[in-house]
Amino acid sequence: MFARIAPRYDLLNRVLSGRRDVAWRQSAIALLGNPPGECLDLACGTFDLGLEALHQGKAIRVHGCDFCQPMLLAGTGKRQGQAVTAAVGDARQLPYADASFDTAMVAYGWRNFPDSQLALAELSRVLRPGGELLILEFFRPEGWWPRTFYGTFGRWVMPVLGGWLAGDAEAYRYLNRSIQGFLSVSEATQALATNGFGCVRWRPFFGGVSHAVCARKGG
Image 1 (cartoon, one colour):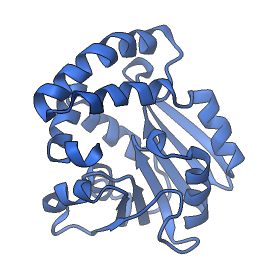
Image 2 (cartoon, rainbow, N blue to C red; image 1 turned 90 degrees about the vertical axis):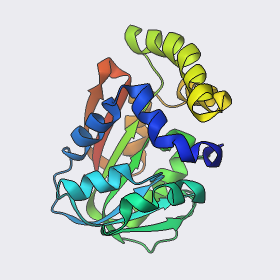
Image 3 (cartoon, one colour; image 1 turned 30 degrees about the vertical axis):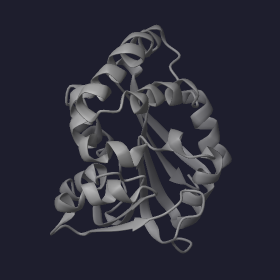
Image 4 (cartoon, rainbow, N blue to C red; image 1 turned 90 degrees about the horizontal axis):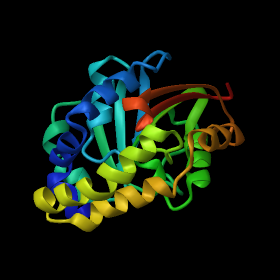
């Protein structure tokens, strides 16, 4: 599914969010407080989050990892000349040694991992003590506005636009289903604590439709 939409992935992100996805990544990266270092961008897609980290001086080098090779290929032109590497990998068994990174990031990929808890354990494993984890995600809506948004725009408009612009309405039906079946904000906070992350800071976007969370290993 991700391979099918890779050529139009960036376009759909901009259209469906009204370009707010750009501002959300900028604000999320600003939550990072550690000195810049080696950064893992897991489920990196076409490298937007990792490139923003470099732009803001929050990383020295970004290591992009995604299970979908066509996504990595779609972002090749964007990372040329940048301190960004790319690797195909599984979030449940990351191809990196223990304590390899100062920072780890995931943008809108956590809910797609087959085992969200195992992915957190792997992210903890590859982070150095005191390292920061940054996650942007669409969590299961709890307030009236996010529930209304996903029950209307998410259910009806996103598949239509996905079919029109990417030729794949089903991929955007899956998007809404995956959000409804994922963790809530409170459940995500507990999952982070269970896997050794503390100092958790949340930032909601668009009234809670999207969230960024930053946590510290061993915090």
